[in-house]
Length: 135
Image 1: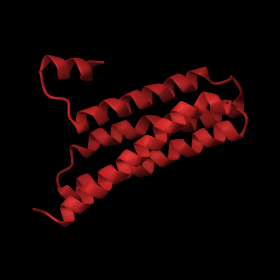
Image 2: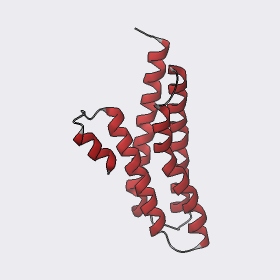
Image 3: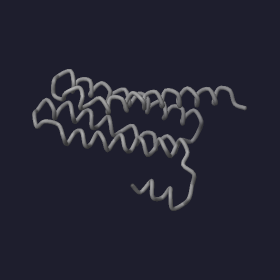
Image 4: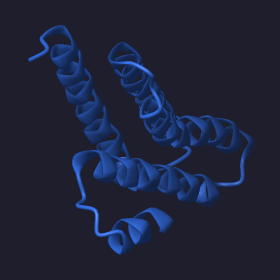
């Protein structure tokens, strides 16, 4: 919540980077809630822990990208976010296909994962294009 408050109090306009920072944070929080709500079985714990770890790391890596020293480093770090987002998609599928969680309980989280994959794919492609074709 601090990010939203700081944004409002400083009267900075919300831009795509800020929006994606908030969205990746909300994504991580959804994975935390999903993990807590899983059945208390060994299989749910093992798969859920993997999903939790991978689902919470995209936002941290996205924030790290903005500490890059150069354009190529920025592109590389945003590309890392793309790779990282593919992992929770895998664990969510395993949670569903193993029968640990019904499909309908994971639909929204799977959809958000796919949307973020698309966003980071576009972001990576645009950043690469800008780097290769400077104005």
